[in-house]
Amino acid sequence: MAERMTYYIRLKFIMAWFHSHYTKTSNMLEVEQMFTEMTEALPKPPKRMRITQFYSKRFYDTRIKPVFESEWAAVSASAGDPKRSRINTLNSVTTRLWENEPSSFKTWLESQRDAEHARELAEHQTVVKELENAPSTPETYHAYVPSASVWPGYTNNFLGPLTTRARFFSLSSI
Image 1 (cartoon, rainbow, N blue to C red):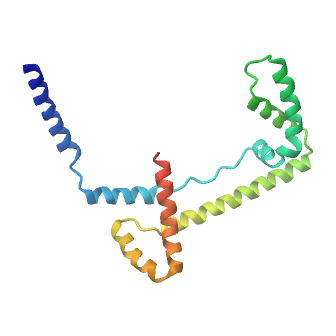
Image 2: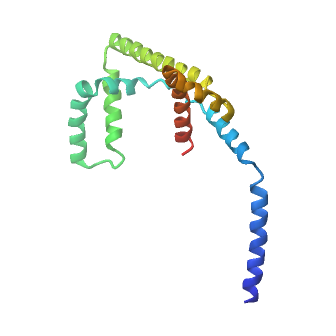
Image 3: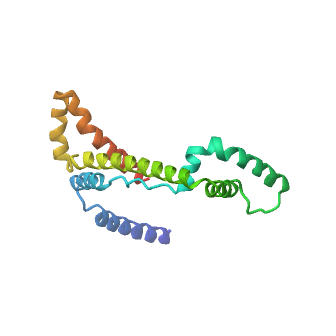
């Protein structure tokens, strides 16, 4: 019984220390920190796909799938190499078919990939610019909300970027 009482007293001291050490921040500071983290959490810019990925994305059904299915049927029937998975077979078929394409087609597809990447990058830049105008503190947010109800179009212009940023922040912190 004495050991239990000693343990209980030590535990109370540890709990008191932990409570005094880790609860020194005010609630307002935590809210401001949350807004700061939300405003600094910007979405990452899009990456340019490898050319074989883009080729597979565009022409899987017409050019890659028939060849892949026949090769996969042969590989899975033989049950030879255990390292030979479905994705490895697909990647090797895609690479081989890409290398056999004519150079004019390769040039055209690379330009298509670059154009798609430029479009995604432009969309990303507009999102980033919209997010820069979002409020950074609870006070500025509170100042914007009443005026948002006055102008219906303003609600989407203001709350849209904030919602996007908040959603991105909550998904990136999971």
